[in-house]
Length: 534
Image (cartoon, rainbow, N blue to C red; front, top):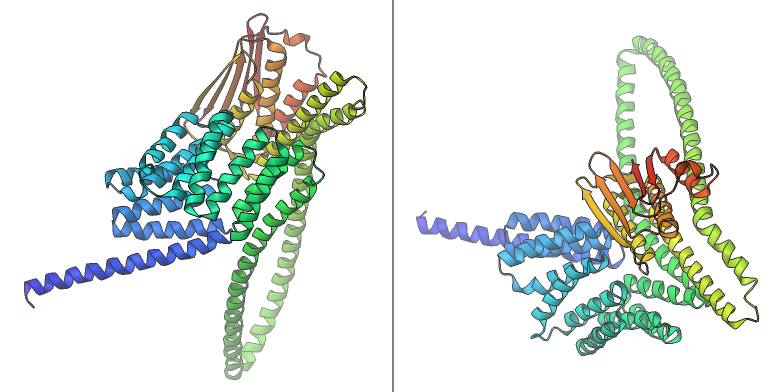
């Protein structure tokens, strides 16, 4: 065979191999899209990781960049925003180095959206404005609507600048209608509904959100439906709407149906595995019976003695094994019962400490709602509204900790920042955060929630009593987690604090439960410092 023929065969071989690899990747993406549509986000993530492996083997730059983008998207829907951000940056690096213009607007938009949700406003605006600059001379109306909606969200939630937010909502609505894409028409309506809710135009907000929900129902968008119903619940709770209960039931129903679909598929998969193993076991037993019968024919006398001894031994082993299994089962049941009881007590205490008091105050306040003094009624109504919002916030914090098997230090730090900044938003005190997270340590949910509640109690005390000009929170994580909270306020004499002080008693109780070390010091007119070590 001539040299040029060999080269041609090699080129054709590489071409067909590449073509086959691309076909495999496309099939995986189709499978991932189906899994995503029915809410199987874990499976969709695994499929996209498999597509990424094939793309990396192909060494084709734009395929790898797109695969990183898809994996990041699935990480987002699996509630791991920091992992999602990491993959989006990997995609952007490749898109920049390989000059892949086709996905630049998608990558920059996704990075900006992640920063919006992480409340890092400056970075969010940089990447979202970069996306707008890329798209402004194109007719990609769906993408233009989407990025304007996300920027509107940033001004609604992070900056609370409703005038600027409305400008972007108008742009989002304009491009959504130009695109004729129901998804982005509904998404723009959602932003309009949130703006109306923030402006306390609750009836108009509910009408707009209902309109968005109908569009999401029309296209079967599960995430969109959940998003619309969740915001509607907030509006109804703010107005004490009696339909809030049915709306919550509808939200739970959609979530349950999502899990039932996934559960049914898992059951079918495990059933197939079980049936296969069952057949293999039956075949093995059949083969052993045939061997045993042949052995009896050949060596009847010896076999009888061996079988007799064997049977006795087997009976002994079976009885012994049954006893061991029963013992382990009882021990496991006892451990499970104790664990459940401890978890119940923990959740009950948390709800009692953080929700019970607020609800008691609301019930007590409602008795005086009919007071003839109009000013007092308005003040009382405002106090009740604030208390209800506080109850909802505390419930969300408890649910956040319960739903997570492990809580990372980064998650805990982000939650603590949001809480502290919300608490001090109208205070003249300067709040400073300093993070040194070398190792993003995972904490059990019970430990994480206790640590978070202890920090809440300390920060609340500083807010109420310290009269401080500055509050500093330092978070360190390497081999252990350390949180240092200090203020430069009036200080107090620790020996003068009553032993039955509820706040300090609560902190000590949580510390003992989760093996958290507390070191505290306070100097009159100089301030107070707490150091919590896990």
